[in-house]
Image 1 (tube, rainbow over the protein chains, first blue to last red):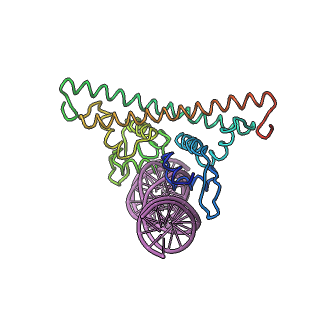
Image 2: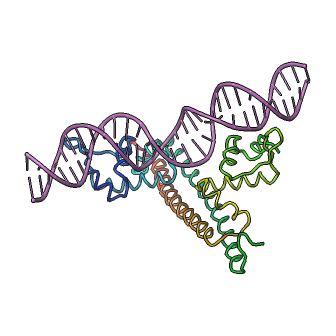
Length: 123
Length: 123
DNA sequence: CTAAAAGCTCACATCGATGTCAGAGGCAAG
DNA sequence: CTTGCCTCTGACATCGATGTGAGCTTTTAG
């Protein structure tokens, strides 16, 4: 498939797909005229890339780790990097959960206040 | 306390504290010579700001929501914004958990492969 | 008093993924 | 052939929190 179709079927912009290629995250065959062509498997690959981006990995990290994530095999050094990213993500989950809990408390409290007739500017 | 002390006791740079003030997130009294002075409670406030930043809120969102988070009271509109942020955070937690699980799977798999003598470049 | 340390403002730099625009070429349908 | 849509490269713009440096004033320690 060509880049436009990959874009629509993944929800990722054409610009980003070209950027992924530039970052060596996503390969493409080129037609004689220079247009990019992708196998059907590219859809999953793009989704995986997006998942890792969403998890806060940089292009560099994804480039290094993606082969292992796809293959399920890694050198000891890469295993260390994988574990480090995993721990970073775990830590971030904890931070987010704490913030969520804080907001939940506020929401509960504020809702109760509203129900009992008080609001922000009232005493 | 002055800005340097607040910086060291929160681990936030002086630059960032001034930025928080510029963003109306953190107030200060000024001495006659113009130096910022903070009450002891500023430490907690800065930590709260950081927590919200870490949860992905923008300065604008924090500015709007911070009073409510501190007071525990909110107008119905703010309650909607609070809930929206909460849901966004919740979604992000889900994304991160999925990525973490993916990495965990890879780590487990790769570790097993290593133990049984295989590695990245072997068949 | 003096020198170091800390504070002030202003302004410009950074990073990274993505948006956007320009100009040119490719390709299918009329 | 032409029209319209897709694609190409290359370059510049963006956003937001923070870094950094200059030049100057205030505070503190000796």
